Length: 476
Image 1 (cartoon, rainbow, N blue to C red):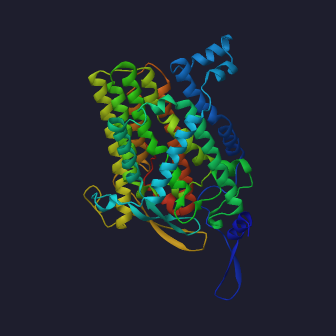
Image 2: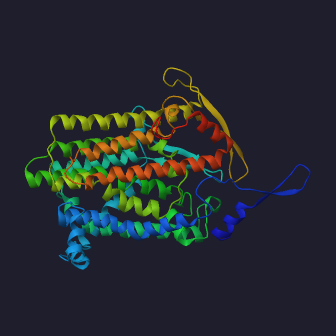
Image 3: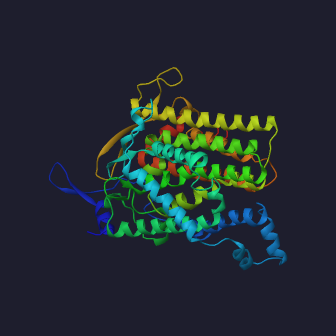
């Protein structure tokens, strides 16, 4: 049975009632949308067309215009340059960059698939090894090999050993090949997205967790398969969300730091702040990778161009703009400014991590725990999966989750603002990140609430009545 036919079959199951008659069983309507409105379709086509050019524009602006976003447009308007001349000045694809990137992806694939996690055996409190994910809309619970922290530690240990002892390559290697590497990441991003798209039609991992909207653009971008896999353990979502992009994030920043040292003979406190604050975020991600299995990326999003290309290209190139900017503009912050940035970043991280910890503790103990010194309050709710099963869940209304429904996103935004503020106020480019993250997290907030409303029905309304604010108490 083809993926599309199987999906339609899963949407229209029959079940036998107590008197022997059959009735059509409606599927669980939670997860990604089944149908696409015109606004969503226009947005999807716009992103498919313009997102790659946005990445190129930001990187090109730093390479050719000292990180000015307005100067290229002014030069074009005045006739002082052309699109073709801008394109001609940009470094092109090189086989050296292709070799570097191929080795990098192959090494991360080797660590992910061939080196089972052992760090959970000797690092207290860390949860690694084989872990169960959340229940899918079809009622399945997948198993995952959690070894991201181990991969990050091995990779960075080798990076440090090379920089200090072996000298196989320069620590500035990433910056030195930054634009040629961009073409390589695009090739992988489009290749994996296209493979996942074709795979969903021809040989889906689980056809009942596929969603076909009838619109090829939406299917390609937002994905059809929920958890595409090759073999038992290679999970597209977990690998591309965490590796190679997020493991590379801190290495990219270290390469920027090395380049700043090479160019100016010193490293600025702003560069140190960006490296430290973003390294905290990355390490937090891998320390809590098992918890990540219960987040919207794994529990809601299907795997398409949005995740495949986004994790390969958008994340490593636009999430690291602050470090790239500081290579071209080595800002030395005043002590007061630096302390304010550090405080904002740490407070944001505390809110982000504490909010997520409360939710994880509540889930693991099924409410039998203490939140802010007392037993947590919650709302009992139920939902139906596509296999007809009825499941029960609890929505906490205590602690940070009683203050706002997504206060973890608020903390995330505070941290994002800290990364940008570390670059001073001389250019707009470093602040793209906070603008983008605000749009992303507000949109994610809306998507999550739409999904929960579809999943929990009237129980979700009871929850929103109990916790009326989304991100900022008293405002939104």
